[in-house]
Each structure stands twice: as structure tokens, then as C-alpha cells.
Image 1 (cartoon, rainbow, N blue to C red):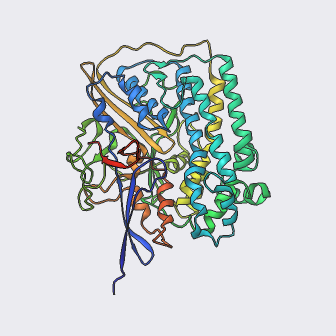
Image 2 (cartoon, rainbow, N blue to C red; image 1 turned 60 degrees about the vertical axis):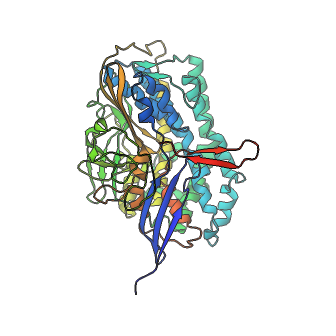
Length: 532
């Protein structure tokens, strides 16, 4: 006798960043099939067509309200490579610092505002850590929730010193940056970093000095650190780890087991004459592909990218490279799980297939021993991955938060490396051509492609981290990364499937809102639109 299949449609799954809808089939209390559909069309590629080449510097940072610096970074580097600019070392440092501090603000904001809230779910009331989790992480009233969300705004004060505001600054431009910080600005930036360190990283998050945490290189050393002092075990990191294991978050959310990162933070002395092909050898945080099944690493190049629209609401055919796409959204977006069911394309590697993007991918590839001497190496998460049976919702989130100290140290290095009397901008010569700019937003691999013809944008394409992760099936039926990660997820209570939320939020999927119309006097919803 076959088991009964229960189908759940969950809308939305995201807490802040919009309209990720999920359908799951459940048999015998376990997810056996899944579909992720992005109920949102933004159309930046359509908006930018035929505009001035520099329009992307203004328009694309508004693609997201929390990682606009990452989009601005990509837009600037894309034009740099298209125009063949020279970018001064100060400008590279300033661009990197802007992105780093934006990522630093995102970490406590996601951890407390989006992730740890789920640990207060009544499904976990039998956990010995539940009472403490409710005390710390209840929305708005939790002690750590309030402290973490409040302090998350501090790092982007440094961004405002460079760009005049955060979010949506456009201070990065082809040929450099439109700022020249003073010694007072640099001194103030140092004080902001120190405040962030003393009042959250060490006192609340780690329960120890950054220097002590940075000594940890293996899973065994991390577990020994937990037991070393009560302050470690009872820190927010310690409670996250112990409760995650207790409620089983290390047991599901595996996914395809293949990962990618563009790498990020070009070295200030290695990428002053940027080219598309020269980027991988110039970034401090390495690019690459990691196959967990074979435990092997490979290169990542923009030429490998393919976008498949078979199950997406676009009137296009085949799996093509972004330079060859013509974004043509369909007029109707009826959900058909056998046909088209998402605004997200299905992104793949031409040889490796579906790949997961995000902090876990970055940390795994950071464990690769090969690379240049100036490139960052860090083997902790790779060691955990190998010893804990691969990916999980728990390890995916740990990898995100583990980057905290790494990014902080790179921010410090940037501040030390500025030479305030040197150049910040070298005026470029505009020309036609193709360009590509990439980085790692906090959620993962982000890149922009631009094709300039006759002084106008002929084609502009963006692939964001969530495009990699939330995409639908490909033409040959291969699930997207989140769809695959949901397979095998145990569901304790189908009326409150918090476990689905764990898996999806471990990717920190980001989709911004659809458009609604309301009566200003009554608040009654008049209509709901999808821009198409």
C-alpha cells in the first residue's frame, strides 16, 4: 500500500526579502519532492536596455536594499573591463571596504532577525536549550535579538563615510571612486570597527577574543573551544551550535553537493588594469568550483554560465550564456509545476551542472590549498564538511557566520593600506565593448554582464546569488539547489513546517516585494499586480 502524499504550498517563505514560494510533497513525514518559485519580476535588464552605459551605476544598486554595494561593485567593474580603465589602488581598497562593511552589517541582521527566530518555535519546546532561546531570540523582545539587530547598523556608517549614504550610493565609478577620505574619516572608521568588535563580536557572539577564535582550524578544535570555558558554550555562537545539533539541523539540507564562488575583493596591486580573464588571479578570496562527492576543486569562469528558461516565465529557448540572452518576460505567469513556475531562471555550469552559491561555497573553496600567496586560505568549514557528512542547514549557516572575523580583518587591512595622498580616480575613455563584473554578495555569487554598442547599453544581464539557489528545474529536470536541499527534510508538524523554513533560510534567499495597490483611507487592497 503506497503512502499518502501530502502537498503543502507555503507562501511566502522569506521573512523580509520577498516572495519565495515553496511547494513540497511529504510522504511518511519526509519531503520527497519540492519546487521553489520566485513570485516576482523586477526587470532591471529590460529597464537598462538602450540607456547610457553608466546607468547601471545608479539603477542596479536599487536591485536590493541590503546589498546595493555588491551590485554597485559589479556594475563598476563591468564597465571597467568594457572600457579598459585603470583603477588606482586606493579606489580598489575603497570599493572592497564598502562591500565588506555592508556584508558585516548583514551578518547579525540575518542571524537574529531572520534565522534564530525559528529556534523559538514551539516544535522545539522539549529541547533543553529552548527556554534560553526564547529569552534571547524572541522577535523584538529577545535580549540578543535587540542587541544584534541594533548593532548591525554600525558597520555601514563606514560605507557612508565613503559613499555619502547607505544604501544606494553610487560612489564607485569606472576608473575609481568619487571620494577621497581624510585621516579623520579613517580614524572614525577604526573606532566604528572597534565598537562593533567590543560590543558584539567578542562580548555577545564569541564570548572570547577574536584572536582566540581565530586559532581554531579543525572540527575537533572547535568542539574543544566550546568546552574550554562556559563563556564559549553560552555565547550566541555556542548556543547556536549546541541547539542546532540538539534539534537535528545537522541532519538535513544536503543539496547537490556542488558549489561555486566567483571569489571577491580584488587585490589593490593585482587588478589596476582589469580584464575579464585576469580577475580570477587577482582576487584575495579565491574563485572556483568544489565537488563534495569527489572532494575536488576546479576553476570558475564566466564563460561556463548558462541560463535555462524552460521552467521560467520568459519567452526564450535553450540554455544560453548571459551575453546571448534577450530578456523577454511572458505576459502571463500562471504557476504550472509541469511547465513554467518561476520568474527565476535555472542557472547552471556548462560542465558541472547545478551549483550552490553562498557562504558555504566560499568557505569550502577557501579550504583549497592551491592559489597565490596573497590569497586567503581557511580550512575550518571544509574540515567540518568532510567530517560531518557534507552540507546541512546547520553547517550552511555556520559558514555564513564564520566569515565574520575574516571580513573584519580584511576591513582592518584595507584601512591600513590607504595612501591618502595618492589617486582615487583616473578618468576613463568611453568605448563600445563587452564587460563583466563579479563579486560575492553576502548571499553568494553575483555578477553583471554589459554589452555597449553605439554608446548605449545593448544588453545588460544580472545573475544574483538567489538566482543560482532558488532557480527552478532545468530543461532536463534537474532540481534547483534549494529544491534539492529540501529533499529528505523531516516535517514534524505539517501545519507548522518550520523545517522547510530552516532549509530555505539557510540560503538567505532574497526576493523583493510584488506591487500592491491599496485604498489610502480604508487600507483595503484594490488590486495586485505583477510587473511583466
